[in-house]
Every structure is written in C-alpha cells, then in structure tokens.
Amino acid sequence: MTSKEVFHEDHTKEVRSGERFEFGANWQRFLAVLDESRIVAAENSMLQMLGKVALNGKRFLDAGSGSGLSSLIARRKGAIVHSFDFDPQSVACTNELRQRYFPDDPNWQVERGSVLDQSYLQNLATFDIVYSWGVLHHTGHMWDALGNVAPLVAEGGHLYIAIYNDQGKMSRRWKWVKKTYNSLPAKLRFLVLWPSFVALWGRPIIKDILTGHPFRQWREYGSGRGMSPWPDVVDWVGGYPFEVAKPEEIFNFYRDRGFTLIEMKTEAGDLGCNEFVFRKIPTPVAP
Image 1 (cartoon, rainbow, N blue to C red):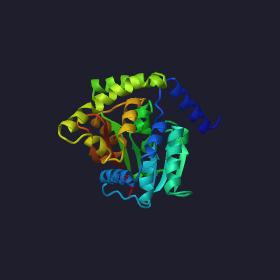
Image 2 (spheres, rainbow, N blue to C red):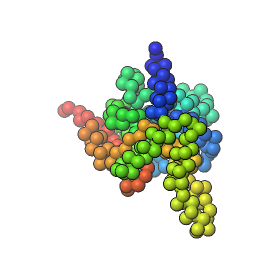
Image 3 (cartoon, one colour):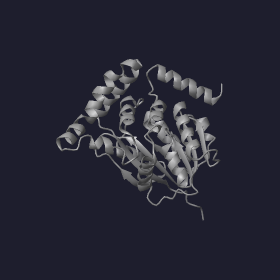
Image 4 (cartoon, helix red, strand yellow):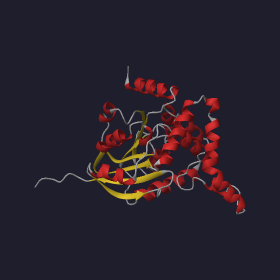
C-alpha cells in the first residue's frame, strides 16, 4: 500500500469514527466566495506578520494547505511553493486554486501528505519559510507536529505558525462541543452548530442592531485574513482533533530547538489563534 493510500484510509477511518472533521469539505464552500478582495486581505495579514521577510524567490512550504489561499499568496509574491495536506478535499481545493491562477506552474507543487509522517517529511527539502496557520493543533498529536516541522526550516529560515490559545476551562468546553459535533450523524449536527453560532455571534449581532448597523460585523468579517464568516463558524465548531497551547509554551518549545522569536500576535486570553514567526538560528561556522 502506498503512502497516499495509507493517508486516505487513515483519514476515512477517523472521519467515520467521529475523530476528525472534514476540513476540506468546508474549504470547498469557502472557495465559492473567494474573490480578489479576500485574497488581498489575507495577503496583507500574512505580509504584516512576516515583516521584512521577503517571499520572492524563496522556498515556501505550506504544511496543511487547507483551501490553498496561503499557498496562492506566496506564489503571487514570487515564492517557489510546495503545498501538502492530509485531507484529500483540502488537497483538491489547493489544486483548484493552482489551476485557477497558476495552471501547470512548475514552481507550485501540491501533494497529499501528513505532518506526522516522518518518512514523507524526510523526502522533503528544507525551506526558507515553513508556514502552518491553524493546522498543527488539528493533527491529534500537536507537540509531535510542532517538532516535526522544525527540521524542515533551513538555517536562517523562518517558521510561521498559528496555534489555538489555551483558555483553560473554556478550551476544554469547546473540545467537548467539537467532539460531540463530529460524533453525531450529519443530519443532527445542527443541534450543536446552531447553539454554538448563537454563542459566537449572538452578542455581536445584537450590538450591531442596537447601534443602528445591523450585521456590520458579519459583513466586515474577514477583513483581516480574508475569511468568510459562516465557513469559519462551521470550521470552529467542527474543528477536531483540537489542542491548545499557551504562548510561552510555544516560545519555549522552539527556543529549545534553536529558534528565536521575531514576531508574535496573541489573543490576550481570548478565543482564536496565537501567531508566531520564528527564525532558525544558523549554526556557527568553526574558525
């Protein structure tokens, strides 16, 4: 059995057992509303975090490419892109964006792969930029995944990741919600989805109505990373496996592996992902 066949079998088993959300199916809905304004918003968000880190001509690895949007941005900025994902429908989404914007481009490769598969990762080169936004906490083995991407960063290169913020009891409650959602038959998942939607969006919607701007936050959602509100609600409620980390835990983890932090954006104890950009410290050359 090939590695791709193993990935497919493992993914199918996990989805059927309620242990994995079908992220790719949700990303397909997002691609239906993806337009230039959303691409530009996501591009601005990425470039703001990367700061002076140039993309043109750099080797860029998108580990867990999802919709393919981040890979698309990197390629548009001149990077040589390698995208992979464990979810077959996410791979299809990334391939769809490649065909839309860079058909048959040899500088953008898309593959099926797992960040937990050492044999797959060992066949990859090292990269100037390793990017994994909101992915590694969905593997079921977050700390292994965090460790596995470290050797993929070239010396002097950069690692850009986003990991769910640890909110203590609140995070444990959301983990229960996500596991319950995935364990239910598809026709009954609304029993979890709609109460969660009210919990996430009820207050902002009421506030907008009371201030005379009905649904303003809903309409303006995604101005930061180009996302779409409803697919994001489904992604959040269904996103399982689900693990979290405190910012200092991520910092210490990569410091101990020869990385230095150059940029960080936290949720200040709130819901969402903390973002980090690390630089891999080059090994000193012996005199």
